[in-house]
Length: 255
Length: 316
Image (cartoon, rainbow over all chains, first blue to last red; front, side, top):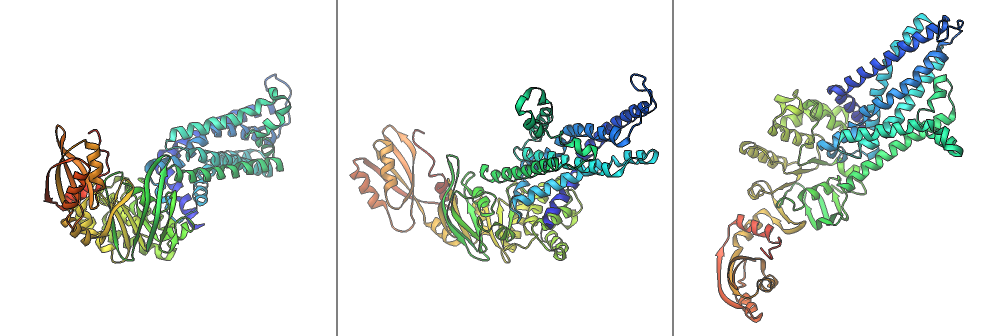
């Protein structure tokens, strides 16, 4: 386990030694800030009765009418940002030849994948942690419930882990970061869009929408832990890690 | 310390290494000598567990590299052709990281990193970024990285490639000194390097062992190896076949052509004169033997002859 930490730590350090981490964090905080203020503004107008149709003041709940939608929008933002975090993970090691150091060290292939995964996950988690600032504002001026909020963050963490594990698969398939990033993004986009397949998929719509990666965040965002969603994400993560390991193994055969 | 038997590596339809067998004793410095593309890097990658062999086994420090990879890898230090450096890390951090993933216990880590820095004369650049180092320093950091976990076996792929003459000398001296505590396998395409640094040599060409032995015995053998020039009248491919079939002839290749008459250059086994048998086989095959004379060869010439003999010559 000690060597897994060593790998994860090096991964995090290398992100912060390059502009990647800063660019992604800045972009994220900018987009999140935009949506936060926008949603907050709508929330305030509605609660004061100045909503779209000038109706009466509504009794709104911070958790259900603001935070929930914020989580949902953030998941779409992540669709674009996570590929930037994962694309270099293996591709850069393959390109520069440092993969040879890792694969000839007393590490199992799974330990290498796990080290990478934890490294990127740490970066992702620190990105999420930046949004605690916005939540603090809500706690300061309002009184949201903290339990559903926590569940929402758990959902975000699971969603991110699922994204990352698949990003690693694509990163280990190529020595070209751009190709890795693009493939990852295309896959995520597909997994997001099949959420809307309900309308045309007919009898299979249940199955198809179950596959949608962002759909499963909905219950978490409401503050509900549904075992179906939990199983979905854990399976997704497990599959991603397994495929990354298999791809890493195949690197040895591909030579 | 290293036992390799019958290693073969195929990439699709290309055979990079075929049926390699050799062994290295503890404390020995073994050199792989051969031209580019002879299979040196592939062999080293198999030994270090980077790629698996298609057939055959490799046992390093008592552990089979395929069935006990972790135990074997713990005892191997490996310098690939290009030092595997992370440009954004400092020299010290990099070595500390390598020590961690190689499983050096926390208590020994600091000492080991310092010792490797010392041994490879890197102490003055310990806080520099690896990506900003000159070629010579990068190579030395690559060596330090291979040493940091005190491996029993060191595998160095072209450790002196791309260095200037002064650095080459320093590196060779360093490798010689490492030979006291470690078993070393290094690869090179430079003959004098082998003579200067290695106890034993394996000469590879086109994926097979062409010759192996102690450096001294090979030198003696090479010194005695001789070159014959024969002038034969007859169809070239057939004559070549006759010449190559002769016992004691290593290589045969056309040198000059004059109509149907071709001068061939042969390198022949040391000791024992093959001229008599050679003359009679040529005549028996129905070709006209017009001339036959013997020349001494230098070490360098024999090496070049040995490693270039298998190239297709027909239709040149």
